[in-house]
Image (tube, rainbow, N blue to C red; front, side, top):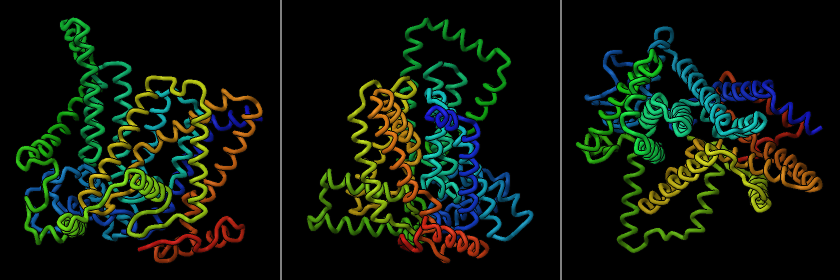
Length: 499
């Protein structure tokens, strides 16, 4: 029986079903959720629209921002490649329709396409890391049952381009460490630079990976005679390796954009992200809601410091609150409206957490079987640590928990799932028959409970109402809610949301 189940879960048919499941969910949310409910969607769509109204020959560099200050500074922001890229399909869409609803829906579909590419890259990484087809399919299914991954995929958000680029950077990094070839080196550099031009917060982890690559390259050259290295390099370029030359050309272009933005910002403004008031007036900057919020909170924090009421950091309490917020904002909706976890969902999550701790204690043999798995673990731990420290510093500076978004963990959530699947597989293989039966029973039970309480469609329909839906999808969502209510998969308005 277990062999049959394993064969089914390993099949290509299951993989196709998972991808279709992801596409159906994403398309449903893209058509159902009103504009600007997804996180920062208004900002991203207006920035894309700003670029789309410029001449195709104007390029990505903006030297004359004299309006649109609700976007904050867009002259020297390093996060612009996503908006510039999507401005081209928007230009094309505008040739056929001026309807904003249609434009938003098509841009959302393009974002879903970006994430499909991301899923394909993850499969490549899993293969390189020597996961079985069954393990890869299970991890992919777990990701497609992760609320914010699916919801953000169906929105206009720069994460949808940043995530695939980041995963491609990891893939080329793993290839490079495995086989030091120039094409992998150029590809890693290209995608790493492109990633930070889409979303700067990836810079620290990619900088660490770059340091590892450079150290590895230096060690390789050091251990070989220099003229042999130079000869191998000439041979690579002398061959009709058009792919390498194309990658190099794109790298030069993207590298130029990187220098123009990061290099100039660092030299001229002593910061890769210049403060808004270094380029515009205070009044102009205050038109941006994020700047206004941060500015007000910094004044509050400064006042607290003057009265010796600065926030006291209790490490265990802060970590507990951080984990709780991350859980709620990965599996439940966070945007201009937020869905809160139910008491029963929190209970299931807590039980699952302790189950994982028990599984870790039962591990008897070596968990990581390849260098790629070890490197992925290193990347995952470093990324989570960087995000945690960044949030901690922000809390100390502002005395408020701003930016605690579960979606910021999405870059490594698939890898967390990888190690969870490897861990359960490891304990299963090293256990007796009786322990295996208990383990399988508990895994099936907890899987069913987690799907019931955390599956994106069920969470969405339990807690949303007409204020969430586009006019054309109200009827469908009401009918679906009634059907699921009759078969007791959901209770109406079981969860709460806040505006």
